[in-house]
Amino acid sequence: MFSFKNYIAVTSLEEAYDELLKNKKNIILGGTSYLRMGNVAYNTAIDLSNLELDYIKEGETCIHIGAMASFRDLEINEITQQLFDGVLDRCVRGILGVQFRSNVRVGATVFSKYGFSDLIPTLLAMDSTVVLYKGGEISLEEYLKEESLRRDILVEIKIKKEGRGSFQSIRKSKTDYAITNTCVTKIDDKIRVAIGVRPGKAVLSYRAMEILNNNERTEEIIDRACEAMSEEISFGSNMRGTAEYRRAVSKNLVKRAIQEVL
Amino acid sequence: MILTLNVNGRKREISISPDEYLLDVLRKLGYLSVKRGCDTGSCGLCTVLVEEKPVLSCSTLAVRAQGKKITTIEGCQEEAKRFAEFMAAEGAEQCGYCAPGFTLTVLALMKENENPTDEEILHYLNGNLCRCSGYISQLRAIKNFMEAEKR
Image (cartoon, rainbow over the protein chains, first blue to last red):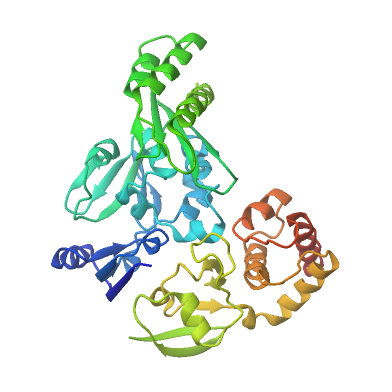
């Protein structure tokens, strides 16, 4: 189990950032549900709980989700329930129980780029941006492409207001981690296809998107896009499923999701 | 560090290491209804209420519960006893190890949703595993209990 020597409940992001830079073994706390599975000894744990970052609010052009909002918030909040056909609710509601989802924080999951995440491919398909305390606002797509984790603090996620979405996944049991998952969205008639739990971190299928966005979306074109996705995306094997299985299942999940958003 | 907790309406002080979890601290304080199960956040055995919401005490740092209202089954014995009668009537539990966490989750559900559908009850209780009995008998017991509590 992870451990730490000191604990600070900071009163500002500036204080949190200063603390973070003081020692390589200092860490920002999210819900600690995943962190506790590791065996790392940290120096100082920095708690953002007092910074009121657990908001979900509607701005002029975007929905803003604070880093300390929980998965349970995504599930029951009226704004997220309506957003992209409720895809945020649908992608998190199968994750263990109410208690677990109340504990898991959006910011910690996204910042850590967890490969097993149901939320990250969904946000990626929604063309979200992440707001970092020092790094400013960048697209989630670019953020996920970065190899290492930044020494920074994820403050909020921004999501465009309008669009349709479909989240699909396959699991061995209802509340288990996904074997693989996908989210497809339609924003201003442009389709975005994200694949998660490959089992690596989520990626977009650029070839599938190119086919779907440059052709009339007939059954044949959809099949061609799914085929292109399965050739483009790199899948791997682990205890939950083989690469071949993931590749085969993904094609069907993506097809289902495309049909739902059209 | 010295931690002050409000457990079942009683102020309790204890010296802890900052990385201790609420489960361990509550058990040190003598609240032995709080059970350790999977220790990975999957089974719901360690559920307690913090500000009337169910949380996994195995995954909640004790320092984060400072100043918040914590309820364990020792703090709601009357409701727990009434609920246990409905569970017994349906043969919905055997060993009873999951009962404290399960009961607290049911009490939280009742506060959040007065008239849940079967699907909403099952969804809310998804995180509470029971290895002895079938979940359908539990569902019957919960529905009967909620109906009786309204009278």
